[in-house]
Image (cartoon, rainbow, N blue to C red):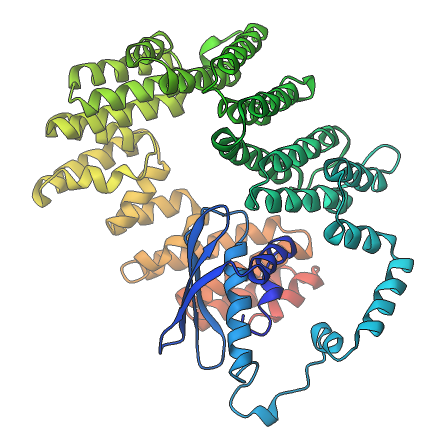
Amino acid sequence: MDINNFEEYFDPVILERGKDYYYKNKVDHIIQDSNGEYKAVISGSDVYSVTARLNSELEIDELTCDCPYDWTDHCKHKAAILYKIRDLLGRNEAFIQKENPNDAPPNNGLQGILSTLDKDELIKIISDLSDQYPEIEKEIQFRYSVDENEISQCKTLVTECINKEKYKGFISWSKVGPAVKGAELALERAVQRLEGGFYSQAIGISLVVMPPVVKMIDFSDDSGYISPILNEATEIIIESAHKASELESEQRQEELFNEIIKEAKNRRYDGWSEWRHELLKAGAAFCGNKKVRNRLDKVIEQLLGKETPVNWNSSYEIEALKVLQFMLIERFDPAEMAQAFLESNIQFKTFREKAILRALEKEDFTKALQLCEDGIVLNSRLPGLVDMWKRYRYKTYEQMGDIDNQKVLARELLMNNNLDFYPIHKGLFPPAEWEREKESFLNELESKDFSSVYRHIIESESETSRILRYCQNHRIEIMNLYEHIIEHYPREVSELFRSYIEYLSKEAGDRRKYKGVCKVIRTYKKACGSESAKLLIDHLKSQYQRRPAFIEELNKIN
């Protein structure tokens, strides 16, 4: 992208927010160096550093920001600095000009056309379009009008957009985006209120967005729009609650807490508890007030009382609520209470992990190892958790400097398909000793049949004879591994390709599969040469004369 068309590469919502930052002069301390690099500080709810590098053609070679936003490729801060840079270039009469300004084509884009019109013409265009498309009028009114009943206005907008896209009580996947347009606009307003220091308004707007959007899950074919809306709403509520807990009166804090907790307790979140937990976290921001803290404790206990899992240890619901309780205890109660709570809930992954890390920090290796061993026994039917506790056990041995146990455990973890332990395991041995260990390990893997670990190691170690045997047992792998063995086994590689191609040809019965066969033949040609490929193609044409579509695809191979 270049500075003239960067808008095409941004999400429209993000672009609008970046433009808002630019117009509000939030791009501070912009500095340009001689290499076309611009650095700026952008201030909003927080302060972030943004860098953009342009080349001589005004193309953007580099664009970075240190904010945590990762939903799309580009954040609002990046958009803001690009608007600022384009403005600076325009002032210097370098905007949009390449080698020769006279060669630049006329700007026939939308912005170029609109820039030539006067105010009355623009008003007429917008009025005419609004008559034809009523949603344009609604969006303009929402964005630019001042409404004392802002929260009510947002609620109406969200609901109207959802109801408009319903057909027989259902919203199809292609209509989900337009259905949440109102929610997106409302959350834009909530962000503006948050950044402007109006925290109560930000919370209120976000809270009226959530109910209709959560309900929408039950009657729509979601295409990835709904969860981000709810995630953003809870993020705004949490951030606003923390700000409000520092600045609002005690009475207003209690009112905000009650509004948030009332929503969190609603039955609509019984199947979507992740957002309930986020709302409870927002409520926790006000727990410096003992009365509020007591209320939140009671709410959590009530929710815990509703949970009756068959397997207590694996209950996500209970663990998430217990973690919230622990957060409150750590924040407001003596350290010994937090430690006692942690130990009484050690059966949960989060608490066992915290206990292990605390033991390692204190260099209490005996306790760390015992916690790991107990976790392995407790979660014996959950391979992912077993591996996790083994990894912590390895970390403990590493901190102890116990090389012998590191070797044993690294091998065990590698055997269980933890490929990241291959270089770790190898690094524990001197070169000569590693050769013996590698041979022993590969022999053991062969006795248990081949595995992804085996494939990874023989490829990494260039074990050509073993790679050949592996391909002979897994013909499809010749496509990926031929380069490792073609020099040593050219005849065998050719035979494996031919065998695999002939098998695929026999099974193919439609054009899609014929194209798949031809893709393999092209790789065969690259590996074994044009002459070998030509002989095979001629053979296939002769064998499958009654498959004209296959012959047509074969003729396309160059």
